[in-house]
Length: 590
Ligand code: PRX
Image (cartoon, rainbow, N blue to C red; front, top):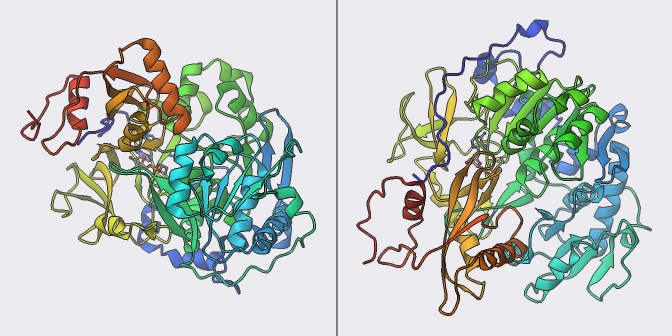
């Protein structure tokens, strides 16, 4: 295993919870063990009144079809980077998403067409995703920090028909459009009314939605119809598109209820993840809105004092964030917390990387609440292993399987191991949110199922109380600040640089970001190693891929260790870098 951090069991004492009947907001799950035995997904399906007349469309469930009193509630409370605020009720979103759906239908969108949304975190991002879902598109949200290469890979793979972008992001789309013949129209969301130079393939979003009805009859949508596609990185090849069904909303809603513990009539919820990643759709859109919860969206980037101010100003009660952000808050110091009134907070959660026990305990000490870790993946579509308000927290543990989910630790033959042993973390691929396929890579999807288990790529163990502990990845995938990065992707970008002959990329442990991307590079003849060249290569990859995926560290070496068949031995690069034993080198070329 290449491994990230080794968590394993820690000696932090278990944090007990008070009797649940005494807490101010009674959790939706009062007793984990009881629910784990009795719960079935049908319960949530019934609570959501499903199927509805038009089936399972996520836009109907999350936006259109709440009881009248909920429809008047703020759904989206948006704060721009410059501090400007806008509030959209569910009724407002119903009207706006209907208009977006008409726009797509007027442009000839057919069920199943792929629509890519490449926008900053602005209200139209949310509106357009749901508008496209109403029109039965398969929607691919793209992270606004993506560079042209990352965008091109996804559009080409998916043969997207429509791309939505903004004047400030548009140049990155323009530069690759010639290589993406599937794209018929680029729809431009011009909030500042600054763009005038429309080309024949471009239309204005506000123009197209000006004179269309603000109601839309959502067609019948089967639970198996595709809804969202998120690309995720693997060890080899380009990122693959994990395809989710409309039915995924059942798991997303169930976990929003029992893990986020949302009480829609009183909670103000903030998910800090961008919708370019699965957390930002599953829990920035679907789970919370399925119950009619008010969600805060802050457009800007991380900054400790701004984040505390957002919590204070919007009176956030439930907060779902990530370990790197928590570590950065810890680094910013405990004193700055005193400048803000964070008393609205009542439940804190984290996802994306191992949550170190220090961070769990820091939450309790400084914010008055422990952070509750949750484990899941792009592929699982919803949380699978979690800590719950009613359950004692063992700092450093990912928690216990969500009711309805079956988790196993498997040996090398994919047979279950007993408690206490480390092995492959595996799941029964049965949750409603479990992905349906990798787009056009069904064999790869099938190859991840062994003996009826889905193999997650993580290594973990379960203790005798049924709590799961993360050990690391079993592959070369890098987790940097909660973002998965495939080494192959970065290597491919590196060798496009004129000076680079060969490149090998690894994840290097980092105290703040969990791992950073480190590249070993051999140069072409005629190029000399220098700091300026390193910087140039870093910038080159950053522009091509994304800010999170470029190598923060570059080391020049004469040649890369390879197998006799020419494969770069990343494992060896990593072992040498960390001063660890090199292991089996029998396949190393001479
Ligand atoms: O390695 C695990 C790590 O992130 C991977 C999934 O990444 P992604 O598909 O991008 O989805 C991230 C958001 C759901 C996992 O295979 N990971 C995620 N959550 C945790 C974690 N590692 C340790 N502890 C977690 N709570």
